[in-house]
Each structure stands twice: as C-alpha cells, then as structure tokens.
Image 1: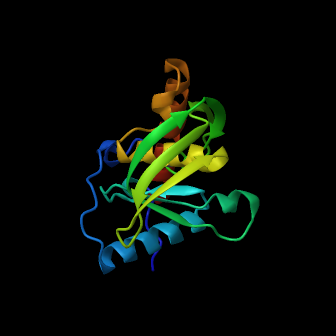
Image 2 (image 1 turned 90 degrees about the horizontal axis):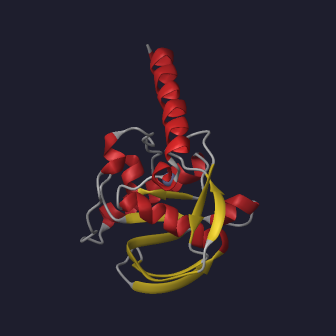
Length: 174
Ligand code: ZN
C-alpha cells in the first residue's frame, strides 16, 4: 500500500473524463487500497481515481471519518445514477482544493448502481453526507469540479486563491 500524490486544481488531468474499469484484478485491488490509504491520510471523506492521476471510473468514500466513527469504506466502480430526488445545499470541500469550502446545490437523495472491487453489481440508496459525497466524487469522473457549481464571481475568487497557493508551493520547493 502507498499514499499517492493528490492533484490540485488547476492541474489539467483533473479535467479528463475517466474511462470505464474493465479488469477486476490484483492491480485494481492494489489501486483501491492505495486510494483508501491516501483518503484516510489526507484526511477526506472521498477520493476519486482522477484525483491521483488515474483516469478510471472509480471512487472510494468513508463518511464515518466525519464523525470519528468506525470505518465504513465503500468502493464505487463504473457508477451510474438511477435516481435523483430533492435538492439540498451543502458546504463542500475537496482534496484537490485545499483550504476551500463552498456551498453547492445537490440532490438530497440518490440511487446509484455500481460495481465493487470484485466486479459484483450493487445498488444503493443514499441520503445525507453519503449522497453528497457520491455526487461530488462522481463529478470527478466526468472531469467536473467544485468550481463548476459556483457563480462566476465565486469561481474567480477560488481560482485566484488556488493560483496563489500554487505559486507559494512552487516557491517553497524552489
Ligand atoms: Zn473533490
């Protein structure tokens, strides 16, 4: 297992739509383990493969982290939404936007179909933080980011903050 580097906005790789997972093998299992370890180390409640530069349709979520409760790790591979119900506003963060929190409109409840790490198909109905996290992580698979849900003004402010951070990081390295 290894902690992978999380890409930060405006890295262009975060904009590439991910490809379906076709092989459910040891390599995929190792990738899922690395993603979970990277998410817990960050820490975050979810991490999508494109955030570590792997262009595949999968993400991991553990909403128990938010409450310091025992682990409830879930893996979603090749997910598809079956239903969206209601609307809810929620203040979201993203591991690719360190230090940024923005209010986003999401569906209150979702029904999703996905495969697990063995390729078995499952369906899940989610609400609360789990529903928000599923929608947020699924956006990453389409190359869609937190900023895309914001007004033009908020988007500019976040962009500026992230560019400032990127140049501060470059200075620290140099
Ligand atoms: Zn994110």
